Image 1 (cartoon, rainbow, N blue to C red):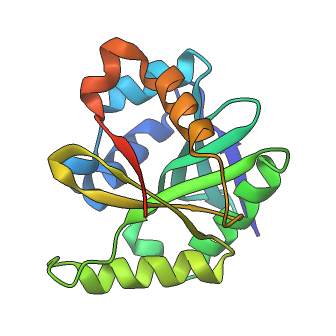
Image 2: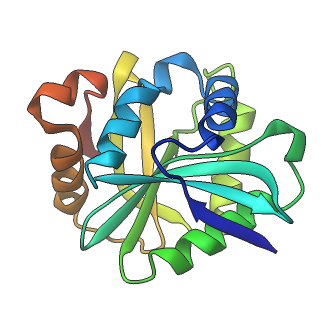
Amino acid sequence: MIEVLKVAAKSPDFKKINHVYQTVFPKNERLPLSFLQMRAKAGKAEFCSIYDQHEWVGFFYTVFDQRIAYIFFLAIDPYYHSKGYGSATLTAIKKRYSNKLITLSTERIDPAATNNRQRIRRHQFYAKNGFVKTGFYTVEKDEEKFDLLSQQSTINPQLFQQLMNRYLTHRHHRYMPFKIIRE
């Protein structure tokens, strides 16, 4: 049974979060950790640590407002991979944000991509946990494409756009330029 704890601004967990963040996510998909912390401090997002029997196993970072929660980053320490923590964390996230539309994005399947097998496994993992394609994808840094997934197959993309606009603000859009495309 996992436990989810919101991470305070000066938490010692940030050393572990930073290590896993730098290890698991490719450089072109990362934002400065200081920026993520700043937006969390402003109440636009939150970091949460994942524990099993007081052992830190990973984290997630969620951007949210009154209507929608976007799982921006979810990472399990590679030492704990394939032990069910990802699925258990998604269950906890669904409970934590039960009054919101929960969304996330994952790299689009692309046979030309060097990590296409990994992309397929991620899509299968999210499908197994109740997330489906919404019919929209984003185009982000380096023209990378990400499928927008949700527990509902139809969503209003404006909700996601408004959430991200409030999160990034005009001066922060350089961190994550994106546009939403209908399939």
